Length: 349
Image (cartoon, rainbow, N blue to C red; front, top):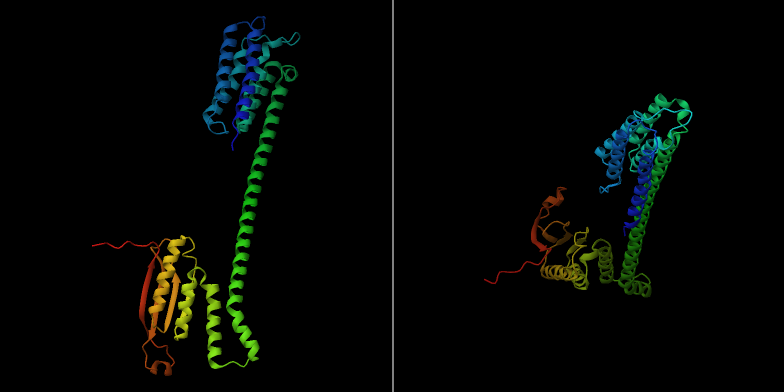
C-alpha cells in the first residue's frame, strides 16, 4: 500500500524552508545593502516562482526537463540581478543582502533531490565562478557559496544512495518471488511424484504379490497381464490429466483386445475446468470403448486451439510383403476424433 502523507510533509517542509529565504530577502530591503530595491524584488518573485514550480507534484519523482531548465535559469539570474545593485563591501559585509546564495543553493538542492544533479551542479559551478568574479576567493565562505555546494553534494549522495537501495530492494523482492515460485514448483513436482508413486503402488501390488506367490513362474496370461500393467504404469507418467477411472478402464480393455494404446499429455488441458475435463474424459472413454483399431494414439492439443484432445486409430493394410522387403507396412486411419475444448451446443433444428 502506497503511503502518500510523508511526501506532502516533505514538500511542506521544503516550501517552509524556501519561504525563509524570501523573508530574509524582504528583510534585507530595510537595510541600505542595495542601491536599488526593484531588481531585488524581481529576484524575489523569480525565486518564489521557481520554488513553486519545482515543488509541484508532476506524477514522477524525476523533475521534468522544462522545470529543470527554468530552475537553472533562475539560479543563474539571481546572482546577476542582485549583485548588479549590491554594494561589494568586503570589510563590513553585506549582511542579509547575499540572501540569493542560500536561495540558489536551496533551488539546486531541490533539483538534485529530484534526480537532476547535472542541472544542479551546473548552477553551483556558475554560482562559484560568479562569486569569484564579484567578491574574490575570500567571499566564497562568508556569503555561503561553500555551504550551498555542500547542500547539493549531500542531496546528490543521499539521492543516489536511496536509488541504489530501492533498486536493491526490488532485486531482492524479485529474487524472493522467484525463489518462492521455484519452491512451489518443486513442491508441486514432489506432490505429483508422490501421487504417481501411490497410484503405481496400488496398481502393481496385486501383480507383485502374484509373482511372489508363484515364485516368478507365471502363465502366458499372467505375463501378458504384466505387460498391460506396465503400459498402465507408463500411462500414469505420460498420460497425466488424460486419465480418470473411466479412461483407465477402457484403455486396459482395449489393450486386452490387442490394441496398442499410447497416451500423451503435453499440458494442453491443464487449464480446463473440472466439468469440461470430465466431458473430455467421457468422450475419450467412449471413443476407446468403440474402437477396434490396432493402434490408438491419444494426444492433447496446446492451448489456443478449439480442440483439446485428438484420438487417432490406425490399422495396418499390408499383406506382409512390405515387411519381408524391409519396409514398414502402410497404415490407414480407422478412427479420427477431435474432442473440443469447450462443449459446442447442438442446434435444436
